[in-house]
Image (cartoon, rainbow, N blue to C red):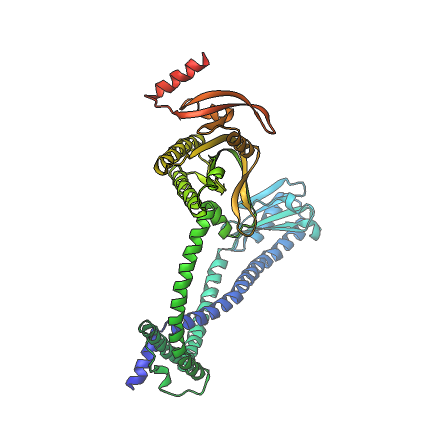
Length: 483
């Protein structure tokens, strides 16, 4: 007895029991509601038609008799027979032209115009009024009778009708729900509850990697699908414990490899571009209206490479370019690539920034200081030649193997020419870059030089950054320049 009480209590507390009871109950209610809705409107229509038919008999009698009347008083006396219906709150009598002959009670919006080309017009107005207009021509009369009905009783009858149906549906729903719950509880729900206890036990044991479990649902042998499931689960459990340990080890190795791959990708590509590649973009190409490109080349490095060992050569380049990489990170610039002893960096992409030219100029000046430091430290004649240009560029990722983020456009070509046509230990800039920096940096006018593929171009040498005492100094310098 105690065991049965405990089983019933578990059945009552089970979420599955409540869910089954809820959906069985709701399903029956929904089905009955689907049946009730059309029944409701059909019942409403029947009551309206009944009301209309009663007044239609009176209206027909009136319109047929009105054709033989000779005085208005006779028409009014005849119309009182129509008003005798308790559901009629008002009426109006008009001729075929719409001229009102007489009316009493509430006024209807229907007129003779509404039945000019049809025998009858009907209108359900807001609230509890129902209007009907009859064209007397169908009865051989020259009049139009408009009657307003009080149909408030229909609402009361419909409410009573709905409550009768609701009570019947509630009784049926409760009986079917309880019967279904009792049957399913014994066959399905209680075994499922035992299975849930076993699964909770498994969850606790997995964290402890315990393999010697006794399942509650296996206490009683079941010759059905639930019993088959538990036998199979018991057989799989030991294997799961072993595989979990192996999977944890594999996941750790995979995560380590993923971290390495992520870092390698970020070393090759800008963060924003790497994110786009990981999201599945196969073609990445963007146009930028303005960016500043820098090319740098170590002077006489080729000759130096012939006099030192390959290992020492690579070590020199690695130290120098590592310093350059630190400067690019410091000024939030994007390193594009190195080719031999040449270094390329750009400002203003892939994320726009208004001070890209200033950041490139600051890095170029620092690059000169880095080279000077290395020359003093190693006693080698290290010198650098730098070229800078500003303008529109196209940037994107090319290739499917060993791909890089690269730049294209005339701006890039001119920046390369600024470097190759420059002088050792100088930073040569185009006139466009000069115009962007002239108020914050000092320059030397080199004049026009002949540039391969471009003809003569005006260029300048960047010397250093100006130290301005105040914003007024910038304004004064600009006014002086204009004068």
